[in-house]
Length: 88
Image (cartoon, rainbow, N blue to C red):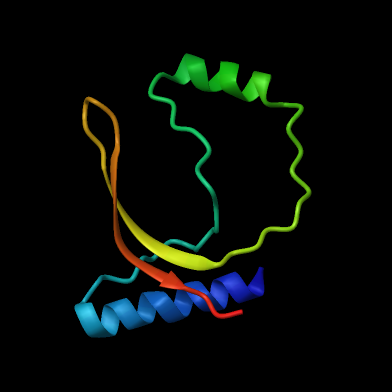
């Protein structure tokens, strides 16, 4: 949605100006990661098993979190670097 794009642009530019975090050149596409699959054959199986899943729900966002992911051979490790509650 347009409001997510505005939020992304605002946060990205603030991080760039204050902390020199490079701006990404690719187009922002909001998403939620539901699963990670390491082996391609499994991704096809997962897609086939989830074909019935249709999400048509309202989503309430009450905070934004900056999460660092470190991918390793034993799996991803996540660390929340910052959590900002949203007003409302």
